Image (cartoon, rainbow, N blue to C red; front, side, top):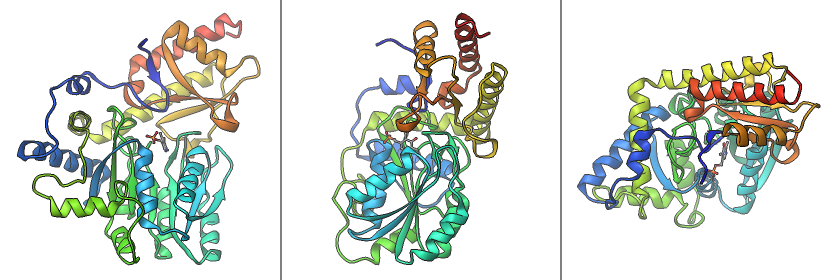
Length: 370
Ligand SMILES: *Cc1c(COP(=O)(O)O)cnc(C)c1O
């Protein structure tokens, strides 16, 4: 397969230490030696999540964590409030409906943040809502939602909050304990800069209380958080999870996390801010308009308005074929209307940022626009 510079909103390009770890020999997913690796990975993740909550490593995409969260916290027929401003917000609603939940979908326009005042008003009317579920960084547009405020509103009503932090944890501060975030799902292949297939998920004391207060089994077995807690207790010393784990991916995640934390997590956050700043300034200079307004524009991707002089697809194809750079397009109703540039992983490096700006300039020049 041709190798490109990945400047898409995930997966991201990985560094050599992680790549080499993926090529290491097989090890069993249990026993003393493995347990040391596993426990260290959990502790490193707790630092990134800023939590002392229980933390599990589901094998699967980030969505596995969202399935587990919604299916475990809520029973069929219960109501969940989903404030949504994009594709991944409606995905949360879809997952909830698949578990037989009643979804109160509170929609906001794409490119605009969720409005806490509207969430408050909705919670005041919908008295039988049992949980709130929201995306933090809505990657379909690059909007960073006001998670802290929405979490506080949920808690004021005694409700737990489920967070899709798939494209935010590790890339910017998400203080899980300070904000009281109850179930937080992420994945290895975005801001954690490692290959896909590991989905870390944290579960608060309040979330366990909610689950324990409801009679009957949770949905399913593998994606039931109850199952994971059961094995964490009963097989604690040698195999504290219900199934085989993707050991290579977890070893790679450990290596990536160690590097990120050794370099300083603040520096990791800052590199995205810097890369986003450079990309936005460069695009602005070339006559592009950003799709998301300043305050809510997440540092982890930049979404840019299409221009009347050319198709977004033509720009994306040119960057790929002539410069070996992959960017993301708009999805669903935003197809052809925006393009998205990722700043996660190696995309945040000076090398990638410079290559991208040079390539866009080259496109404009050849199109007679610069
Ligand atoms: C990438 C992404 C997802 C989907 O993650 P998968 O690993 O493909 O399941 C969900 N939500 C957000 C916000 C994302 O950025």
